[in-house]
Image 1 (cartoon, protein in one colour):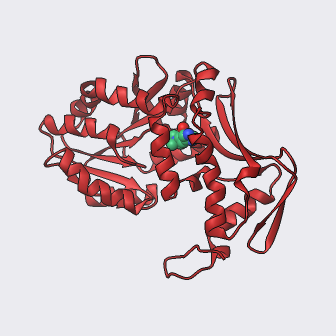
Image 2: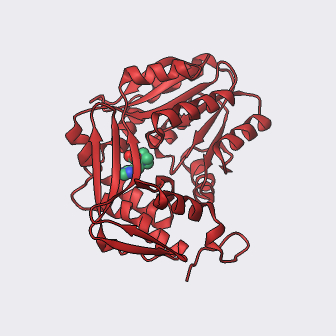
Length: 326
Ligand code: AVJ
């Protein structure tokens, strides 16, 4: 029996957008599922483990930037703005941004930090923990849609904004979707406002593939968790042993794609529908787009921003790009 409960506590999986998205993806050819559904409680926990993996360089590279270049990151902001707010889209545990917040607070600036996340749980934790890490900092967590919450920030204060979108979260968008997202972000800002966006850079394909195919199988479990979640919340009967994890990387386009591969001819039930999988048929589950510095600078211009400064880790594997709204 399905155990998905909506906010009124009733069980009706067939009406949720999760259900509709899954049916649409499994009815398509080739099949696909959206990586945004990776992040339930178990998925959050698996991603925490991924960030600790020796192969998963992204988190450590960006952490190095925030740790080693904190003053340089703060400088353009302190230079331009008398007063400002910092908004973080998809704040997560805010480990990286805390270094910058600390630096800005040390500079004697009083400002508000607005972490925005779709997880209410994450926001509750941050409102409690950030003031403990940065004493005196004003924190106002916002739980909901990125752009609606951005509008809310402007209602609360008319101060200049710095918007953080870190961790290569933008990599889950196709190039087209990323441009669309940045255009909409631009639309929600005022001229002179700043954005700092974390991009994973093109590099040796072996290093990229290893990051999405760790030896211990955590990334495989993370990918398969999507099927486990569908079983649990949408009344399906995927056999997790009959699917394998398969990441690919195309060094020309920079697209790192992960798939789940059906290991047998099989039928899977979802509610009252049945989906057939051929042996070795893939389900595309995730895009983790990699960029060149030139592509990033061009995207800034295309979407109404001016590149201000790129902050790299020592290996130039990752960049936090600072842009100003033109
Ligand atoms: C959280 C989207 C940045 O694409 O690298 C990690 C998620 N997927 N390992 C990424 C992820 C597989 C991650 N992002």
